[in-house]
Image (cartoon, rainbow, N blue to C red; front, side, top):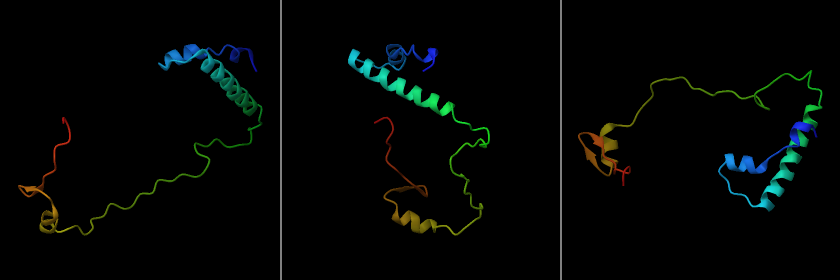
Length: 98
């Protein structure tokens, strides 16, 4: 473990996160954080010079469909199924500020 990683102040980090920790929890998390940092240091030892940088481990593509006009529901049929209608529009119960 490098020198800069030895000074993990779990109490300070918990304070920044507004989390109250007991001394036992601080000790537990300190050990866990050291293990995580040790693992990251192991990853830094890998030779990745021939690995192409990627944003994702697998190829990710946006799937867009063409914006085409299709058939829509009949307005009268929709209004007939609505629980409440006013001025040709579906009325819904107010849910904000209740």
